[in-house]
Image 1 (spheres, rainbow, N blue to C red):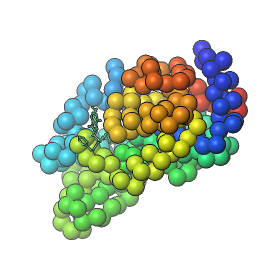
Image 2 (image 1 turned 90 degrees about the vertical axis):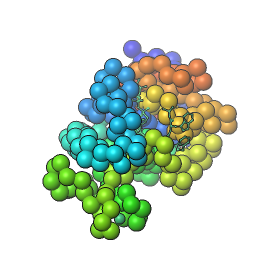
Image 3 (image 1 turned 60 degrees about the vertical axis):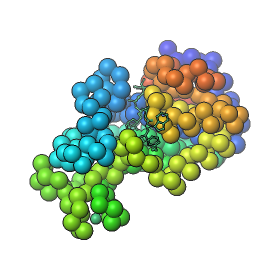
Image 4 (image 1 turned 135 degrees about the vertical axis):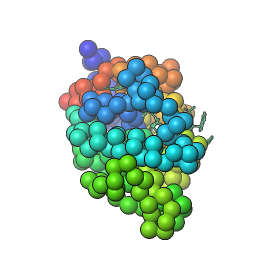
Length: 247
Ligand code: BJW
Ligand code: ZN
């Protein structure tokens, strides 16, 4: 049962807000059938982050890394945006100064109609040169050679998924935009994220310190919970459409 009082309170704050920032994590895509990372059914239960999501892992075994990303592309390719993605896209058109930042690489926000999405951790539908020549290729719906092969850049170096792995810096322009949105907002919505991975996990804290109401929408408690001014326990795909109805 969604907390109706908290929902009403939040709707009121959103109506009077000058700027709103939302940041999503894997939890918003759970209802679309995309696995999250942490938790009982999370990817890190069966796969080691250090073997798959670090530059060292790619240097050691690029084939294994590509197999894992192709497997995830297969799941994401069949997934559809859910009512949570759709509600966020509509919130953007109804609320002025709405900025959406996501840690997800699945592209489901854009498919739901959200515009100017700040993708902090990249996008699984792009590949880029691992050798640093700057080449980036859209790989949506495109077989990258043999299923088990490692795709090669036109410069001869290997291509890699255009995502941000542990130990890698986030794109400076994107994190700068996300920081600005967090600092400038009146309400910050943290949706479906474990709030463990930095620097993304620091954004709601930044917003809170700058005076924003920080709202957590999540099925479970996270390290952010004690810092949140308002907590809506529940599935993003249910809470966000319910919130939209109250606006
Ligand atoms: C639902 C739901 C439903 C379920 N409805 N909710 C400061 C302090 C400590 C460490 C560091 C620090 N600064 C940097 C670091 C190191 C590291 C880090 O943060 N480590 C921590 C884990 C300790 N960060 C980095 O390395 C970053 N780089 C960086 O900072 O560079 C400079 C630097 C380097 C080294 C040292 C210091 C500085 C890069 C991080 C890159 C993260 N990459 C990944 C993979 C991306 C590509 C891919 O997808 O393959 O990004 S890891 C993975 O975690 C992925 C996610 O975007 C990210 C966050 O996960 P998310 O989205 O929160 O998902 P889950 O699964 O964790 O949580 C799901 C949540 O949903 C849960 O809470 C559920 O309850 C909830 N949920 N169903 C609502 N239906
Ligand atoms: Zn190249």
